[in-house]
Amino acid sequence: MRPSQKVRKTMTNKLPSPRGYKILIKKRAPKEVTSGGIILPDSVKDVESWLEICAQIVALGPYCYCDRDTGTPWPLGPWCKVGDWVIVPKFTQFKMDIEGEEYRFINDDEVIAVVDDPSMIKVYS
Image (cartoon, rainbow, N blue to C red; front, side):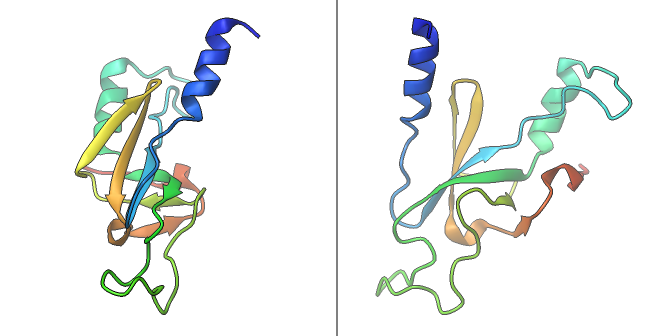
């Protein structure tokens, strides 16, 4: 293993851990190539990235889907789990870039929907 590979692996294991009722999500990367095989220019990928609302759940805070006052779990249970693809609002409070990937923190009640296949989601401005 080259030294750069070792550092990359170590950095990936050190993602921020959400606290309270926060959820850490990773935005879906924009398409590089169309279904017809056309390579998309950076300007198109930038627009698609800006419009993107689909993300994967990376980590849940310890109080996600719990009553804010008592800490008891919500009666209907959690809306999502780690690994799920979800639809979230375009504009969220906190964004960060880690190793070229965009991560965000959202509140547990900001999950709009869970989707089985994120490639089927099309966003319109």
